[in-house]
Amino acid sequence: MRSNKSTLGASVSKYDVIAKAFNVLDVATPITHYAKPKEHLQHIWERVDDEWFIVVRDERKIHGYLAVDDDAFNNPITGDAQSNASQITPDITVPGTMPILDLVPLFESNYFYFVLTSNNITHVVSFNDLDSLPMKLCLFSLFMELEAAMLQLFILKGPKTDVYLNLLPEDRIAKAKDLCGKKYPKFDGKVDPAKLILCTTLIDKITMLSKSDVYKILNFPSKNKLHSFFHLVEKTRNQIAHGDSILSMFEEPGELNNLIVELKRILAIIQTA
Image (cartoon, rainbow, N blue to C red; front, top):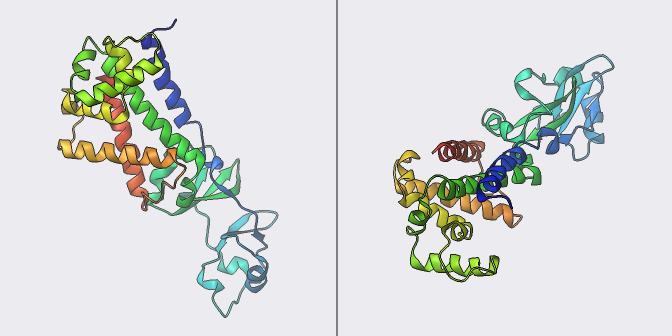
């Protein structure tokens, strides 16, 4: 039977792999509408249905793109595709192989990006595309990695497990004991600190973290800031678990990116504590 140490160590690395497993192509929208350089805008407007972007290209090169909300499509619609196209420049393109989490901060500069597959523009990705299952799985994996790192800290980093448990209110310890009895049939009410901590909730782990000496090295300005951050983590995790929108919580790209940056910062501290 493997020890808690080997099991917990493997968990952290697995969560990290999952968080990096999905890339931009997993959430991007394929480009299906193209226009010839000399095609009239009126004709393009009439045949484009629900697409947002139209790539202007011929057999030799890509000349740019049109967006359905461009001023060029306001009445009267005049001119051809090439003369009205905007350039697809390197600063609005991303490789399809880029991990989704690396894409998040880029949306602070631009709302959408064209996606390169080999040397071809094949997809477009926007901030709204982050409200998708692959992105939610990446984010959820970070939350699970955080909880696994806490368990490593409480159970593996020295003989302090019972000390951490004693930071919990009696009713929370009682709930952990109750779950422990159901989870481990041989549990007879005796305090096994390691098993009890494995049966605590995320909120319990946050309580132990905030009341222990670890709080000081997390570099939060105050305990209120710590609790606010972890409340956001818990709320976001619940949104994902219930299949709800995460973008209803993060209307601006910077807000979501700040959560991810802070998560990674705290993870790095806890994993080396």
